Length: 336
Image (cartoon, rainbow, N blue to C red; front, top):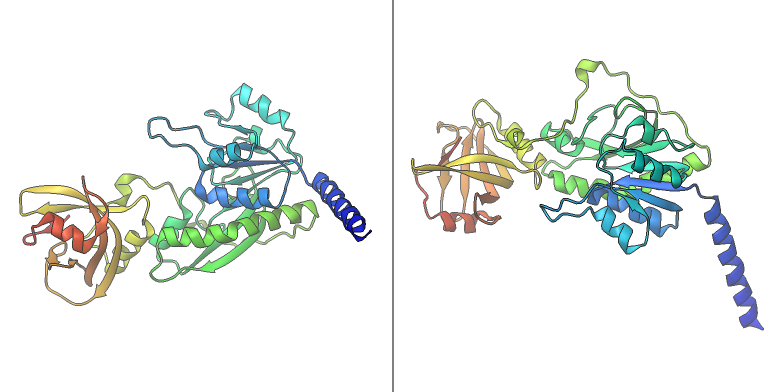
């Protein structure tokens, strides 16, 4: 008898879950990175009604497939990989999903024909406290600029980039030695919570307007896309603090780099992943290098940058002891 009572209870509980799921809006998730994947997993594991996914096309030349696509395949979720977001066939397929809401995490700019489609709108998760650090690389630029705090913002997508009505914000501290990779992991760990709380607030009509700080345009900081040329370290006329922040703000990707000069014979590109800063007064030329069997220090304005991990062009990424052993030359080295 107890068995049948328990079975009936389980069936009732299951029916309640099914009915509750039907109340969820039809969601289209839009993203392309590992950062996006965390939010998608949270939504899927909590049984939200994901009717489709939009992600980036495959890069056959680099043998790269979006982690979002891989997750969609593993869990039998329909997906689209448009090259052109205004292509008629893509828009027709998107409309067939009949989404109530779209959730965007780490994707390219959406045209109005896409973000304006769902009746409940489209919201984006951005890795900064807006209106500061609008743009493609907010995590990197926050560290490069020496900020001690950042966070996440969710907002409704509108015509102007990263400037729609703010729904939620969550602020976190940036460690003094933290790299962009470490900060991204911290933000990723709270991203799922932010997406789900935002979604629930929209479903339950509990959105409270967040007043943006009235910041003059001259005081706003931006986060444009970072190109390889932007990652080169400028040693001369740059403070030790700025160099240190740039290296950790670009680690592990896209990675700060310089040209390393071997014994007045040749330059090679030298990527720098991790360093320590040593503040010290000295009279050595900026860019000259002090080496021993186990360390490499570069003289800069206000001290030395001690290399912990780097990669010489054509070699593997390695700790500095192995790197020094590999180049075998320890005199007359400098960077520029």
